[in-house]
Amino acid sequence: METLTLKYGINPNQKEAFVSHPDALPIKVLSGRAGYINLLDALNAWQLVSELKETTGYPAAASFKHVSPAGAAIAVPLTDKERKMYFVSSKTELSPLATAYIRARGADRMSSFGDFIALSDECDVPTAKAISREVSDGIIAPGYSAEALEILKAKKKGAYTVIEIDASYKPSEKDVRTIFGITFTQDRNTYVPSDEDFEKIVTRNTDLPESAKLDLKVAMTALKYTQSNSVVYAYHGQTIGVGAGQQSRLHCTRLAGDKADRWNLRQSDRVLSLPFRKELTRNEKDNVIEQYLTEEPETDVTACWEKYFTEPVKPLTTEEKKEYLKTVHGISLASDAFFPFSDNILRAIRSGVDYISEPGGSLRDDEVIACADEHNKVMVFNRYRLFHH
Image (cartoon, rainbow, N blue to C red):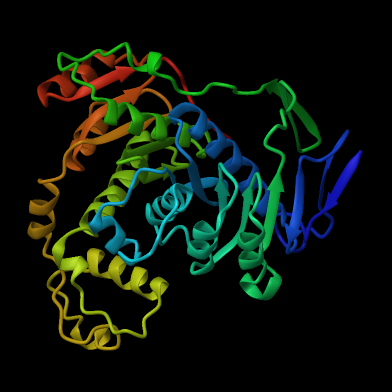
C-alpha cells in the first residue's frame, strides 16, 4: 500500500489526513503540499478534462472550486473580444492547451479565484505562463515540460501544489466511500457523452448544428462532475454559467443563467472600454466588473469608484442590460436531471438559450416540450441522469 500524507483534512482541526492506494498511487506531488480539498478537486477535475478530450477530441482544461467546476473548456480559438475580456494581449502567443485554460478560467473569473486547475495534456510553457499570472492553489496534469514545471514551481514562492497523474491509470469498476462509519459501494459512472445522445430530438425544431453538439458535450461532461442539482450553460467550447448544489432545479437554472448573462455582458463595448487605472490587477478588475454589472443603476457610485477608473462611469441600466441580452443567441444548456416545470425553459430563453439537453422522464415532459416548441427551441432527451454527490 502507498500512502500520501496531506496538510490536514477538510478543516484545519481535522489534523490527520492522508490518501492511499492498495498498490501504488497514480499521482506524484512535484511541488508544494496537497490538501484534502485540493485532491478532491484535482481528481474530479482530472476526470472531467480527460473525458472532455475523449468526447470532443480537443485539449481541455478545468478550473475547480469546492468540488465543482467554476469553468471547463476545450481549445477553441479565442475571438478578439474574448481575448480582451480575459485580459490576454493580442500579442500573446497561445498554445491550444493555453487557450483551453484561459477559457476555463474566464468562464467565471470571480469563482475561479484560488482554484485548482486540471489539464488534459502535458503542461507547456504558454499554459504555465498564463497560470503564473492568476491566483490559484494548484494544478494536476499528466506531465509538464521542464521549463513549464520551473515556472509553476516558482509560483507562491515554491508553495504552489503541482501534481502529476499517470494518464494510463484506470480505477476500480466500483466506487467506495465511508460516511459516518458506513461504507457505500456503487458502480463507477463511466458514461461519456457521444453524438448518439443527441438523436432523440423531441421538439418540432430539429436543427441541432455541430457547434451546439460540441457545446452540449462540454456542458454534459461538466455536469457529471458538478455537485447536484446542477445546470450548465455553454457556448463556443466552454461553460459560461454553472449552477451547482441547489435543492431546486429552477434555482440552478437561475444561478447559471445569471452567470451566463454576466459572461455575455462582459463582452459589451461599455464593459470592454471601462477606463481602468493601469495599476489595477486582474483580480481587482474582476471585482470591479462584477460590481459594475450588479450595481443598481440609480446608485451614485462615482465617488467610491474613483480609485478604479481614470474618469467617471455610469452603470448599465436594467433596460440596457435587457436590450443587450436580447442580442445573445446560440447558447446551449444541459441539466443533470429532467426539468419538472416549463419555468426552467422560460428562464433559460432569457439568457439566449437555443439548444437544450436533458434526460426526460418528468410527468410534465409534454408541458416542457410545448414550451420549447412555442419559442422554437431545440430540445434533446439524452436519457442520462448525471447526478454527482
